Length: 211
Image (cartoon, rainbow, N blue to C red; front, top):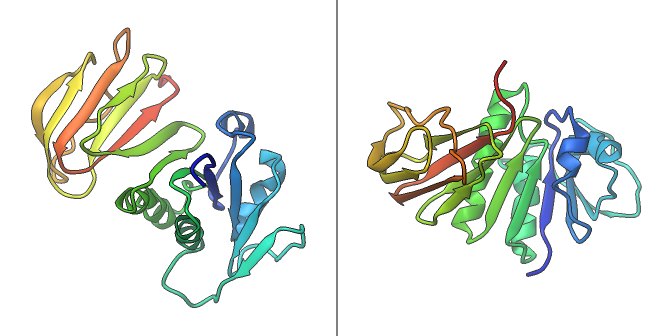
């Protein structure tokens, strides 16, 4: 699966399908998780795999592989889809339909980024407003095409936080969950670079300027 990416689609809100579709690639492998099936027509792709307990969407016969989960379980349908993809050898993930009105599901889905990273994979969540990923020791470039970006201490204290070529630069800084001050930064011309020496940051890159 080295050359394929797993696109895991949950039932969160997607308003601008055109925006989200721009991230899709012809060779992607599509995993629809239960109510993620509501996004099938909007995304205009066919499932390779459908997984879920089907408590929020009826089971459909598309000719795709279908895995039915029990309703009473520890893992969410989204996590079940991610776990199965990792088991099948996928290391690159695009996660869609992961955010929305249900804050509990949104937060749980954001932590899928950490779960995938802990299993030596990489993942990106895309919604109608932003892109989200977890940053650890690797250096990440942020294009100046983004309106804003934020760094959030994600799993405890983050030490050695560095931001270069941004409106609010940092050098060997500390960000703690109790004091999140890395919000609404802006990349300068040529783009920004961020990295952290110890800890795990949630990087959120916003597309639009606030009105």
